[in-house]
Image (cartoon, rainbow, N blue to C red; front, top):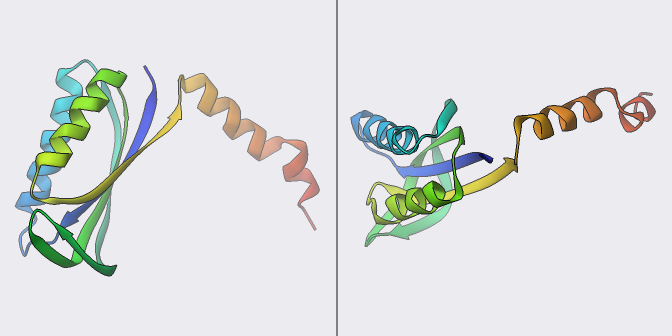
Length: 122
């Protein structure tokens, strides 16, 4: 299963129950389809760089969060549909980090101990 990272920008609400529910819904969707959620991070509430419109509402402040997960491409398509229809979501993007955990670990070793890392030292 490919490994993905999703960054989600959610409309800001005074109480975090809406965001908690969205994160739980997204993670449950992945796990119900046989995927694995590896990490969920909250980046907090931030001002948007510009006023954004989504589902007929304008947003100037939003909550940012990320989720790292493994899932099939078919489940990723259904997750995108879920995000598209949800009125709490302003924007989201999904990055494919790798096809296997070994690919990501190999890249990490190369950047930490590779020739380029040694040549960058002063």
